Length: 247
Image (cartoon, rainbow, N blue to C red):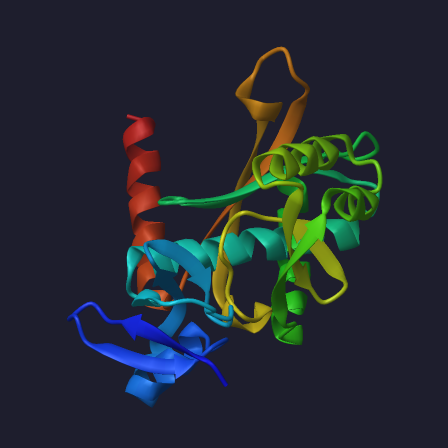
């Protein structure tokens, strides 16, 4: 089998089988590193932990305590949120999911039932079911025509498919989470079971693409961490911010 040459941050170079993943490379260093790692940064670009590497390049192992690691977690939590909403409200249309320094979110639109704060307990419970199911998450690249069939007329997703295809020579990246498939340009974890510590926070209106001339969607906000200590600290920070706002 052909080999690729991988350069590590310290300048060391090691050969691996073509198609090796960041996970394979992390395991070659130590099992403890492999358990802490969630993604790779290959030639400066964030890649899925189990994505095959097929050319020479520079690798950085992204761990849970790295800022990029938290971004990967929150991208995954955003898709778990969308999956839960889809199961609860099959007619719902979806805008974009996002991960940020403050948490994650997903924009939604449902003429029959717009999501409100009263729904968050049920949505969070459904998310916990999806996490408990430990569904494998995989990235696929589809042709534009196949991606359009997948979104089945959702006006927002249709627009996103066309934009993605135009920017990527007709290719559209999606992530599969069990039977649920979602457009995403953010690297994700390998399984829903890795999204253990999360909570939904609020719902607010948000214009599609941030333009007041576009429809108003409902944006569901949440946050996620790899450990309870960080979640508890975030709870304190948010409570202090609320108290300052009321002074």
